[in-house]
Image (cartoon, rainbow, N blue to C red):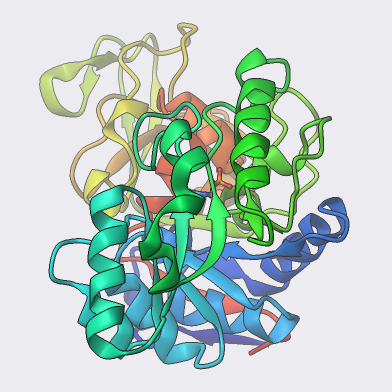
Length: 384
Ligand SMILES: *Cc1c(COP(=O)(O)O)cnc(C)c1O
């Protein structure tokens, strides 16, 4: 069963690119992570529009599968999640911005409090309202980004403000859980365990996607996967245990031949080393496809560059990715695939989100969260 997203009122024939999002794969990944997490509650991190896949589709699919707790970065996203998941527990990771308590409570959202001033503000709001609203407490164990210091965490139990609200979760975040042998993982687990022991009875959460797969099994009471839900590999260097969720297909707008020494694209950064066939595809950096996947040099030269799958053949980009278009050297693609309007796979098959990220000098996370609003989005999955 498939369906077009509400925002995707682009007729099929006129759509420059098609983004397929497989909600069955998303739910299957959540179940895989839940099994991997043993008895811990498995939440879902759906920040950045559910890593580009769409809050309004991803959240209900996961909630229907049994996911009860969601994490977003901003209040804006959390309000969208609330609209489609009225029963869920929803946390705002970026913490409490001054004066925002009322907005959170109006939508039954819980802040992740990351500093003593945030704790004070939430506690006094609760005192004024006469209700002990829930919140999570974030302790920093190495990231130096958000969270109380470990010593503040160890001393927290003595603070009277803790009685004014309902601490519902103690959390911290891994710095480099995708590096399984990084000694920082163990140091963070130890520091987090110490704070947890100082706040007995509070459910605890440390692991992101990769953290779930660490040999120490730091699952505690709740795990917080994001990237792996959407098909990213939480165990780099090893086989990916997750199913791919997104597939991106651009369409061929024009086909042409270029002769030896002719260049393609802005600033003539790519030169044909012989007679080459070029497909111009209607996807560019304005769609979130990174310009850093551009392909300079001479055709046939080695180098890390963007690739497309055309009729089953991997074909390198030719020249600079522009705003709304990119060029692919399709000389080696089967003739049957080279038709005006024909599809060119940019994410899919061997071009996983991790691989596309690597070829663009970035990470798959950035590829996913950049997935643009101009794509015709087609969702598939039994949960619709
Ligand atoms: C983004 C985020 C996660 C999810 O991380 P992944 O690596 O995508 O699984 C978990 N916890 C926090 C605090 C985050 O910011």
